[in-house]
Amino acid sequence: MMIVYATATVVCTHFSRNTRTPRELAFWGLVIKFCLLPFFLTTSLLIHFLGSYLVVPGGPAPQALFFLPPLVLGNYIIMIITSSHGFAAIVRARDEQLISPETAKKHKRGHAIPIADLVSSIRVYILLHRLDSVAPASAQDA
Image 1 (cartoon, helix red, strand yellow):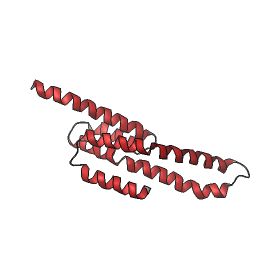
Image 2 (tube, rainbow, N blue to C red):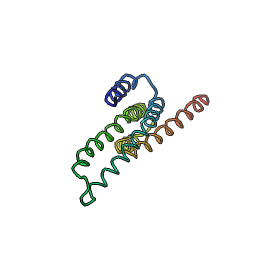
Image 3 (cartoon, one colour):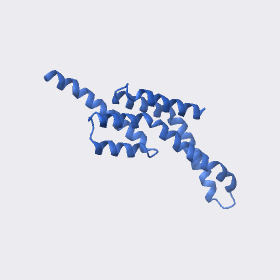
Image 4 (tube, rainbow, N blue to C red):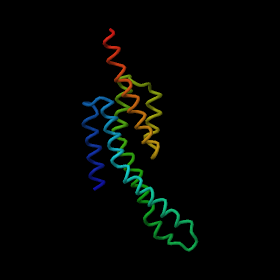
């Protein structure tokens, strides 16, 4: 199920990155990220509890080692895939010169780290929302 969802997300991002505004891409990236947040938190708790078995003397370490790497890898992959809309929004905003290359680089780095990607997604959306709300006001003045 998650592989189908991940594939659909990447395909949707690929086809919508040139037709949507950066703000729309950032918004949908944030929506997708919030939709998968319960999954991410649940697997994070499983990782935490299984990880504690690794340090307990006499604990079921072989069983924990069997489940832990796929959980960690799956958790990280899902969060990176949910960042695809965010990456597309950042690249598009940078190409349209809405944000500076340094800002784009900082937010791209934030999207690549699990927990920080949620904060970075929120910040990108707020930044692009502010830029969109300022642009029509300056267009009316001209």
